[in-house]
Length: 512
Image 1 (cartoon, rainbow, N blue to C red):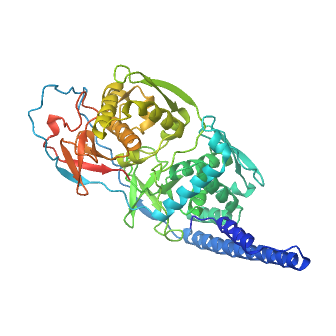
Image 2 (tube, helix red, strand yellow):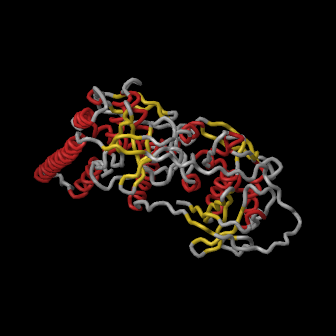
Image 3 (tube, rainbow, N blue to C red):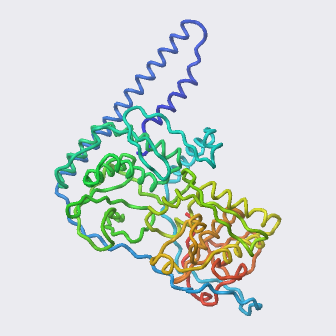
């Protein structure tokens, strides 16, 4: 569903070029020209068929939208439990431990909903190919220069986290609705299905691949584009347009009505916090654009546009390609042989600020800005060169334990907030889950070892699967021992659990 028809054109062009190898004589050339014409006719016929089928699906859906919508009551969004302990970063007792190492009890393992592996591999390979085949992308990592292809048709300039992108625009996109009734929404959907929306959808998919956009970044690009098309007093039209375009990309989404406003409902692959939701057919749809997190009655529908719709995946499986707006930070004084300089990309931080708060697994599984990552990892590599796995992990553990100021989220923000690894490099303070996320990232990238988060009722630590025999407290995951490493417990070596958690059952959160 998410594959645009144009992709098939390129494949078929390649096939024709391989098959048709005309000789120098006139007959061979004419045969080749005829073959090209037949190919073009077939592509035009196939595209016309594709367009008819898509338009027919949209018209049928528009007709369904005319039906009276049902009233639903959204559940209050889940508030992520605060981690109140420790208020002050605890110090390890340097005296030899009298405790014997033990297995930490596991009460739950959080596994991500199964992804469509073929889709992920295909998308990753497409992005890798774009990067390898584009010397401008390779040579301008620090400059973050991106040369956008010329757009055939009208465009609007869209600001997107440091970019000014030219996005395709059809005058007919600018729908006008008399109200937010079923009839008005149905009419708007049918009208949009007769526009040149496929050109915009094709461009969005191209930018998704070239800029390594995850699903949420793609949703944001659609939103920013909609902002340029519709004025602020046409919020309902904007949101119908957003859902229409998002749905044409193959994602699951619904339109809702809350009072006088249209709202957007989308499902995520992981649980999301602080957003009200309603469960349609065992799938949570979160209400976007609502004021506050509270139970609310709204109107919507249970049917879908087609089948096999994709949920929004918040994981950043490839580093998003954003322009560099660098902020320099230094860390490691008194911990490493010498301080290291690291970068933070303000554009990436601004993007993180738009993401809904979700499960810790997304934060510990996501990739970060390439330039930030390269500078951080290259600065740390010399300090672990030649060390055993345990020695290297101990150095990284001490770096995270001692290089960052400790503060709870309540103290710093007044609410619970998780950091992506590069966010922790930017903010002045961090707490237990943020340190665990950064440490897990460093171990995965520098030591190539598997790491899980160990989520206690009021604390978060990590556990590492070493290849060598390493003694220490551990958790079992998939039949393997993962040794506890606590980035919050100052001075604690590999294998030491805070005494308060020796007998506390924990939840295991692996990388997605």
